[in-house]
Image (cartoon, rainbow, N blue to C red; front, side):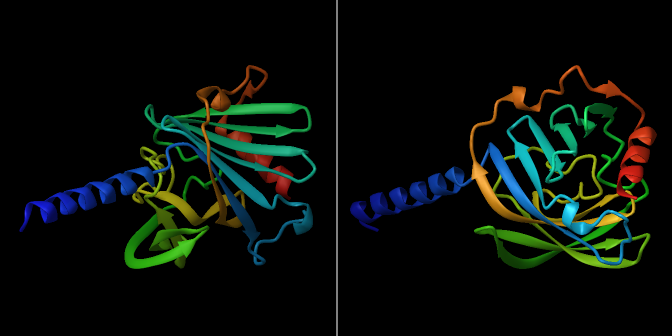
Length: 224
């Protein structure tokens, strides 16, 4: 190989590596569409239920937020990715509550008894403008299979800790969650890379501490 060819090869390899590193998103938001499964009964008309969920993240924190269109209620789960702890909050009108969970408790988005068997596939699927890996997930209790899409495009440490998806080492782009007896499918539709300061994840002091059971009861009552 000539000296010129070697130089060209080195530049090419270095450029590819740099591009790959630059594709890693370290901070930003992902907006998800929410679809509700028709076999789940609720007295709340679907048109009044939240249509989107937003994931905000940086290298230290990640927070899911679901809010109804009228601003009546808002549910969040904020995870400290290093400490493996999370805080769930719920706001209904002017009432604000929080529950501080530990690393062995699932957030209120998931039922405590939910367990998944996960089978990773070789398939690659495009969603929200990026390539995603596919897994087939089995809800063991319900004997039900569904598809989950996830991506390693994001630089988030342990993105799925404290959830039934903890075996998946990638940000979830299409997945299911449970709010009481209501099953939701979240599908990413927009990715917005942007700087997010840690203060954005701070829970204000006006949230009253309650037990996890009480918080789940509030959500169940709200969705009946």
